[in-house]
Image (tube, rainbow, N blue to C red):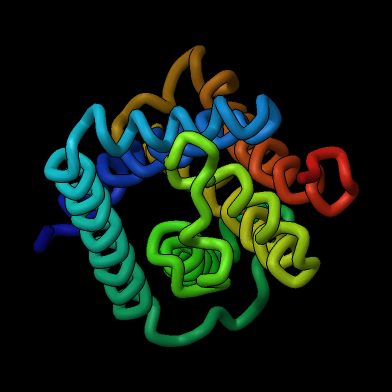
Length: 222
């Protein structure tokens, strides 16, 4: 990762893995709308079918990807600042660069903080611990009830909505940049690939926000 190109490639590859996980995570969590049995069975099977070792191995791999992604981003940011020590004498046209591109650092920080909060909430049970140890009639961790009860708190719901808006902005530009770094954003396929990032960001935003808002509005309730 000493070279700029190496840092960009590492950032793109780890980003690809993380985007895949974000999409998969959202799709599986949409089982909230199918009811307690669907979501609780998925959570139980994920933990017991794979085994504790594989689950923690997967988590460790994702953590490594996150750390590598952040380290590469910091290195690239530092080199960009070193290459441009002073500000431009005039402002560039703000339409040249999208808002998503201009605020990549900010949305990245918000996404990281949200990830920590999310893990403390639904994985560690540190946030709202009173909902964490509830079990269903089958003796399984009642993930469905925990999620629904948590989102009944307006502050929690708003936190998730705001964080997912930041995540969507980050995904919108980062996926497009990933294609460019890997040399895929060229030729006749470029117009199509330019739409992939915004499309993924929109799907993830709508899917994640729908879960929180469905509880707040009473569409999903206990």
